[in-house]
Length: 230
Image (cartoon, rainbow, N blue to C red):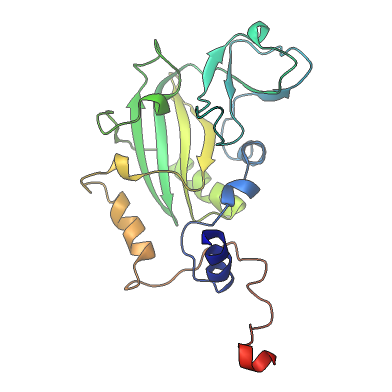
């Protein structure tokens, strides 16, 4: 029923900010292809029935689906340890000092960084996500801000949380954008304006901005009432 409501409301242009099912049309491989025109992107490959030549490397999931109720986190590995009979999404390991995540709210950007002091346990901060994580406000350079705006226009997204790795050479390496990414844990008290920016977008008391990617039936002939259809 929820999916039915999504279609009904979306076709009437009543959705704002977050596009339903946007992750289906902006999958990670498509994201990475377009990202090359805006950011530094680590080399990546999809391997099946062959050995990867990448080293050092990490493996990632191409979807958010669970495997036996487990999340597949980004995992550091060696190419020779991967079973070639299984499909693998492989990316070059980036040596970085900080994770940087940017919450994009219809043109506004709120950036935060986290020191990568957990590398002895994992390369993926999501394994330890909690209010205790020491994320702090981060200032991203103007050229990166401009690139993010253009990239989100290319993907036709009004909202997303973009993840980067900040290298020792001050280079921002693009990882991915989550079109429906969590954000509240970054601004639980409301000091940085993230929550307020989202509230302003969804509040009925503020200006209405329909999501930029319209439903396929949004511009079709108006739906007739039951009496008109008889």
